[in-house]
Every structure is written in C-alpha cells, then in structure tokens.
Amino acid sequence: MKTDIEIAQAAELTPITEVARQIGIEQDDLEVYGRYKAKLSEEYIEKIRKNPEGKLILVTAINPTPAGEGKTTVTVGLGQAFSRLGKKAVIALREPSLGPCFGIKGGAAGGGYSQVVPMEDLNLHFTGDFHAITSANNLLAALLDNHIQQGNLLRIDTRQIIWKRCLDMNDRALRNIVIGMGGKANGVVREDHFIITVASEIMAILCLAVDFKDLKERLARIIVAYDDSGNPVTAEDLQAVGAMAALLKDAMKPNLIQTLEHTPALVHGGPFANIAHGCNSVMATKTALKMADYVITEAGFGADLGAEKFFDIKCRMADLKPDAVVLVATVRALKYNGGAAREDLSRKDMKALQAGIVNLEKHISNIHKYGVPIVVALNAFASDTQEEIDYVQKFCEDRDCEFSLAEVWEKGGEGGEALAGKVLDTLENKVSLFAPLYEDDLSLTEKIHTVASEIYGAGGVTYTASAKKQLERLETAGFGRLPVCIAKTQYSLSDDPKLLGRPIGFEMHVREVYVSAGAGFVVALTGDVMTMPGLPKAPAAYRIDVDDDGKIVGLF
Image: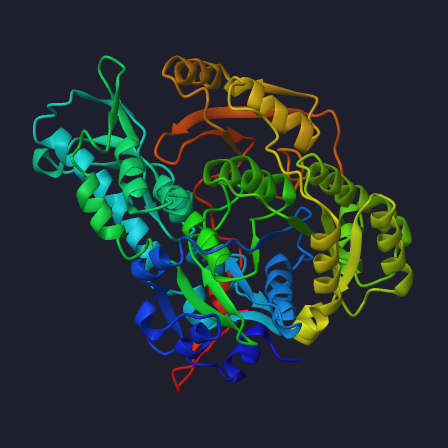
C-alpha cells in the first residue's frame, strides 16, 4: 500500500494556470509561485466581488482520536466528487503548521487519493504566509522592547507586557524564558514567552480581515501591554502598524493549488481550533463563494471547537450563512470513544460502538442548535463491518441526519459521489436557518457559560481568582460585546482530555482570560491547553528525510 506522500509524488499535476482557467481565472489574475502554486491577485478579487455567491458547506468532525477521523481527507474527496458530478466547486482549507507536521501529525494535506498537492510544499514552507506572520509578530515584539530600551515614553509597565514572541515549531523550552540579559546594551531584563505561530493574534487577524484596510485597522488595535496607570498600549501607539502591514501584504492573498483530481483549492491561513478560532481566512472563503457554485470548507478539530468557532466567530464577523454541514466520523474513532483499546479498533466490537456513538450524538445535537442541516459522513476503513456501518446509519437517520459512507481515501472523488449526492439533496430540500448560539449583548461570563453548557455539556464553569479579575477588567474596558474563543483540549468535549464519549455535568475550569482586540474576540484558556505545544517522544521529524535524488520522504 502506497503512503500518502508516495501517492502525491506519483500524481501528474496540472499547471496551476490551467487549473485556474477551468473556473474562469486568467493567467493575469494570478501571482504564480512556480508551476503548481499561485496567489490570487488583488485585482481579481475585486473584479469578482459583485458575483453571486455559491452554497457554503462546512466539513467538521467528532472529537479527534489516535485512530484518526479524516476530516481534511473527506473535505478534499467531497470537492473532487462535486467536480466529477459536473458541479463548479472550490475547496477552502487551512494551511498546515510546521510544528505538528514535524511533531505528531507528519503532514496535513488530506490522505490517500483525496489530497491537495503539491503536498510537500504545502506541509513545509508553501508560499511563505506563516513566515510573514511570524515576522510581523516578532517585529512588534522587537519594537516593544526597543521602545522600553530607548526611554519608555509610553510608561509601559514591564510587569504587564502581554505580547508574546512566536515560532512555527513545537518547542516547549521556549514557553517561559528570560530576555535582555548581558548588560544594559542588551535591553531590559524581563520574563518573556513564545507561542506557536498559529496561536498568534496576527494569524487570527489575517484570517478574519475582510480586506487590507480592515487588516491595518485590526493590527492597530492589538494590545501589547499596559502602562503604569493600567491603560492599554497598542501596536498603533508603538508606530508598528505600517511595517507589520508591509510584511503581511502578500500573505493576505489566498493561495490557489489543486487536488489530485485537479479540483481548485484555496488554502490560506491556519489558526489552531483548540487555541484560536480554527478556520481558514475570510478572504479565501468569501472569494471562493464568488468563484464557484459550491464551496467546501473545514474547521479545525471536532465540532465542539472548530464548528462552534466557525459559527460563533467567523460567520458572525464575516456575515457568512452556511447552507449545510458534513459531520465526519469513523467506526474506529467511535469504538475508541466507547472504551476500546487502540490496538483492538480493527476488531468488530458492537458494545464499544454503542457506548462511543454518544460522542457523535452530541455533535449532531450541537449542530442542530445552529439551525444548519447535517449529513453524517462515515469515513470508511477496510476493517469496518456491515453491521457496524448499518448501526451508525440507523443511529443518524433516527436523529434527522442524512448519512453516507465516504470511501474517498481509497477511491478519491469516485468514493465521495454518494456523499456528494446526499449533500446536494440536502441543499435542495432542506433550508438552513443559521443563527449564532448567543447574542452580542450577553456578558463575557454568560457567553462562556453558554458555550460550556450548550456545546460541551458542562454543569458549570469555575474561574481562578486572576481570571475573574481579567473578566471584570475586560468588561469595564468595553470588550464585553465581543464573542468568546474558548481554548480547550480537542480530545474531549470537556476540558479534560481523558474524558471520552459524552461527559455530562462536569466543571469546566478557566485559568486565564485575555482579549485579542485586533482579532475581535476574548480568549478563555481552560484546563491544561498550551499555546506552545511540545514534541512527542518520537516526533514525526525522525521519519522525514531527503533522498539522494532530492526527493522528500517520510511526510505522511
């Protein structure tokens, strides 16, 4: 059996100019990066702004497990299936982060015969968007420390600096550091921190900005610190906005690549859904809606994280109205949620399946709360039995969900045609009555409680003393109308990664609250979730190499 990278490297790619031409994009509308990658020009985006919008389909999933769910694989396969059925479709995905690629994941371009390509480029440096975000983030950090070094006219309290440096790599040693050591010329000694680039507010800003003007306005609002009177100090105060915008100028443009079957894919932006809002850029999604009749996009991790943030943050800010949701599950993952050991997931186990399917049930219930019709896609594995598949199908149909088996890993677009048919039928016969979960005028505490109780199933929320003070400060400062972005583990509906299935009535623990004023949301950190992940004992990096012919090997 070929690996994902072997399948991708054996594929015959079409020049990106030809991929673009099939959906009406001319060569002059592109800024080409080699033969198989391009950015859409500002002129093209402006040219299609008045086009009618296509249908928006969100792909999400149950909580991730070591067994794998294949959300991106299904997204790509569904897009390919739409193309096979003669539909004008575009996929809108997130860019992978180097940290997980070299850490636990080994790549994030889909899998099997449902991948976006060139996958090596995508999983590594791609078009440099993440490097631009990292540079803009760290430029702001450098300007902040330089301001303090050069006399500190803004009276910044060095004990109240909240802006952190970032790096697109899992490196736990950088979570807590000391800078400015070595004498007066080397800056002011203080504690500092690194976060991973995908958790940076710059990433969130790039993904939520509707245009370049909006980008600069959001950058200006970033709070970097507080002065000795407790007033916020912003990026605008530090005169950082222009230079940061210059670094991000090209990164703002969506990237165009292709699937293995040459379906166009816009891959742009990539915040983590467990520590940020987990969606690709508004620019990419809204542009795709003007380019095609059907747009298939995804949100990170399970529906409790990615889908919730897609609905309550991205759709709220960008005025998006999703028409349907595809909820991805696997028999293996459901059995894992039901207590089956990882090494036993290939064995038929109806008892574990029946115990674990409550996780799927909760996600179905959650999506219904937003008024969007659902199709459950069961991502097929060779070990699945017909009895197991039939059980999941009946379970879904009893809960007013369409159901389809997706065989897109093995068969590509052909294996997704049945799913595409169900999605098309849903779009034609069921009306989306989308509305966010909560209103803007609720307090921050009420918004956190609403998500915790309605989406996670928590019985209550507890706050540390410092989190309570932070909430009060933010409400007083006028940030109470912002949506909340809850950072929690992706492995459980709760904030405890060990609680599988469908935990009910637990206490969710909020340890820190802060505002991302530029992004436009308030972040609540729960449990032990980290904004700078670490590497596992045997990172994926151990298996990645370049052979004597210059071919990359080991990327999944």
